[in-house]
Length: 316
Image 1 (cartoon, rainbow, N blue to C red):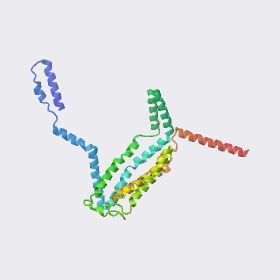
Image 2: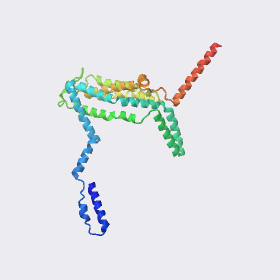
Image 3: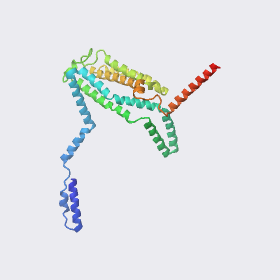
Image 4: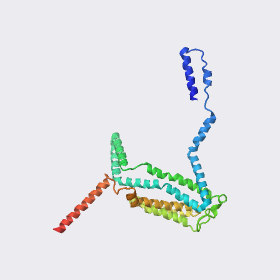
């Protein structure tokens, strides 16, 4: 189409040089330019639709189901559900750990952020736009200096649509035991039938306990304002409120929830451990050049001075 338009333009230019008002059959030349084929347009739209969120969800849903069936052919549906649930958590573990490190670093520059918030409020009252730009630039430099990125928490949230898709795919599989016959007899121990609920309610209780323990062990729950501490205190009991509902869910879904919550607890504890933070990731206890580091250094100096004075008194 582009070459036809270019040829038409050249013809019009050639004719116009000799006789602007001559008998130029412009209608015939324009008729040579055909619009794009509707079949071609439809084909382009269908190809682009492969990348739509709905199509991506459908493709991933089918892939997970087929992968589960393939694993179940060798190891059984119980092991397939357990393996995929743990595998998805392991895939996103680097992003989750990176997000925890970013959160810790943000906590270490909290005094600077409070000071900047106070300065921003003052500059907004003065309507100093130039000062606001400089403050924002200084804040970005501070984050970059200490390796704090806004993208890492976003990557950690990518697991949400993946886990939702896996949940829906698993629920569909467990709702059709006549099609996926193995779900009736390939469970574990006391829940051999994965399409029926856990008769002893052990899996829902394990899920609630691990989730509550993860909330309780969160160090941020012990910090912040008083109302936030109280909120965190009540929040750790929320997982137990879901037990009366999930006990009637298929055992396969509760197996997924239990394995995912236990994996989340383990990953969180690894990310909070001093060995991982200090030894492996080299995150200092205080970021260099920050207010907390200066306060810690000053405190150490005061302790050293007090110790020296006490020694002098003992000598005298």
